[in-house]
Amino acid sequence: MADDYYAWRNENYPVRSSDAGLHTWDDRLTDYSPAKIAERAQHVHSLLEKVRAMKTDNWPKNDRIDWILFRAQLENVDFANRVLKFERTNPQVYIRECTDAIFSLLKRNTIRPGNGRWLRRRASNKCRRC
Image (cartoon, rainbow, N blue to C red; front, side):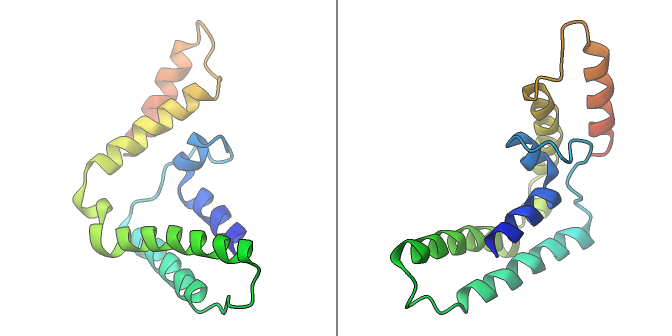
């Protein structure tokens, strides 16, 4: 369940996954359309409800700790979606998406001396979508 969530998160937040070193979706930005925001929030909330419903009393201690940590991660995202609503209240979300996309490409070591045109073109394409 946790592995599926992390795979889903990486695909739905491609700049974050690229920044963490997974460059599968380097050509994409997060979709911040209202429909996708609502879809992601519902997905996390549904998963959190399933995690909360798990009976962990007989699980080994380390598995219960993993469950608590995973639940806490989901609760953090769910709280941000329900209460903080950064996508609607904080314009820095969109600016950060573009700047992080550019810097994740820089960290990837795909930029070579004399290849500045490539960076400008790549940055322009990414930030045009913001």
